[in-house]
Image (tube, rainbow, N blue to C red; front, side, top):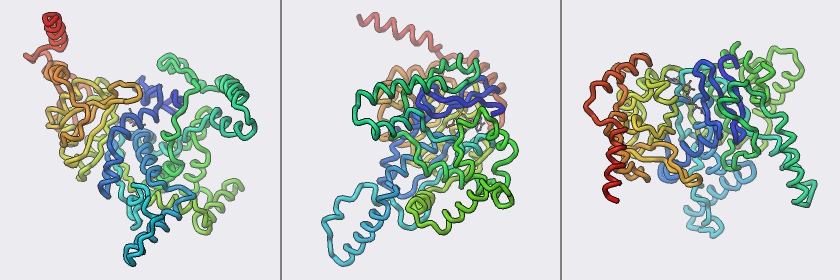
Length: 461
Ligand SMILES: C[S@@+](CC[C@H](N)C(=O)[O-])C[C@H]1O[C@@H](n2cnc3c(N)ncnc32)[C@H](O)[C@@H]1O
């Protein structure tokens, strides 16, 4: 890519390094794992699906879409839109309705999954996701990124069928992993240094994978938004670069081309056969897969707003159940952490909605508090660490509230928020404005607060 360098993160998903920002967009420990652990699992989305019909989501800083993809994958998997049991589930639903009307209760149908009700029979979208990002190229290319699949994984799928002996299997698996490491991504030197990347044999849990349908749904939404300009010159250039090939999914690229009707005038037999196949696939094939796709697609309505999120937010007037705020850190990009921007989010969050961010910073938490949010921490039960911040208008949504000590810290100088009165200041202006306020503030410094706290503790002893 021109301004970005892709790399594999430690869970096998793809991350980006930005030359302009001299920083990474995704955690080296796993871009997809982070999306799951910081944005999907703590959001309580399961309760939303169980309790109500519609879910409105705002993904601020969509980037290459991990948070949206992980959420869609979660919903598709929970709805069990899968090849084999889809018809069976629809039939049992119809059968159930018939039974209710005829008073003919069938014991076999009593044990339906709690999610059965959320396979919406009316074919209308019930999950609305508004995705905001300033970078059109990233948004367009997002569905074309490969869904995680590693050589080790492919190997472990094949080997158990050949060998019935676990010892041999594990020895070979280890050997293969070493062999695969020789073909690990050849990232540029500075990225390696920055990330200290090692090709580890540590890949995503199965449940964290992206369901195969997700990228196709995103691609359809994006290509209908951009139509002819979807695979524009910039995107084509990125896709053609040899060193980028391993990061993109060939079949999705073909599908994107087909959607844009490249295939129609092309004389290449490869493209022509893909084109014919797609006609067959879309109009004639009665394969379950096709039905799965249509059903999954009918659940989602995706909108993409490619602009500064400060402008996009003013165009939106929904009440969101989930807001993901995945902007760069406030020191690099303060404009999406200001009091005024957060106030816009407060106006647009539903009474029981939650806002999630990876940031643990005192400044961010205090900005949320000053905007009347209840604020708490995101706790990772696996690592037993606090990994982000959750905010809501509904106190009951906060499982791990801030402690008295953390609230005290928010009231120090460290918590002084950024301001951007008309949502149009430059980064520099926002930072300078705060520095001025900081210098003239009479609040206690965070270092003094920490010192006093330690002294008080010593006194207690
Ligand atoms: C840390 S990355 C987000 C990663 C993303 N969630 C993903 O899954 O790939 C930050 C993103 O913020 C976007 N961004 C930066 N400034 C922005 C602004 N003012 N408005 C909207 N998006 C912005 C960048 O283009 C980048 O994609």
